[in-house]
Image (cartoon, rainbow, N blue to C red; front, side, top):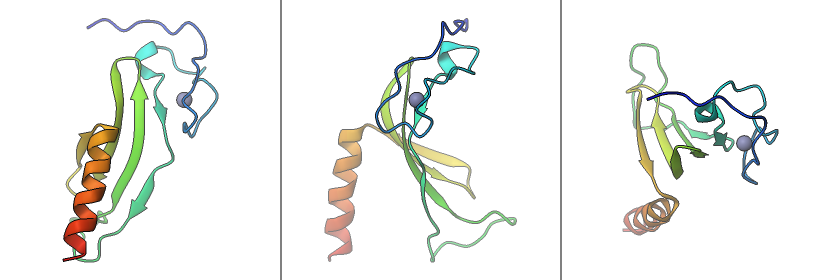
Length: 100
Ligand SMILES: [Zn+2]
């Protein structure tokens, strides 16, 4: 895959934390809008090798992929990417299960 040179700032999403069109990025693929990350530290998870078990959630989109919600788990360095619609489905499922 060949990277495409950026042609100046892009129009940022309204929720983009950077909001400047990402003018410093050299390639179009790097001009990604990312929301402010929200982080929680699950009390039932243990620290692994000095890395806190934080879970970080943010929204992102870029020129080469659809908007997505990212659920990142630091100690396992893994993430789950879901569409915004799937994120709402997860919200409903978590609420239902938590209320049991
Ligand atoms: Zn942006």
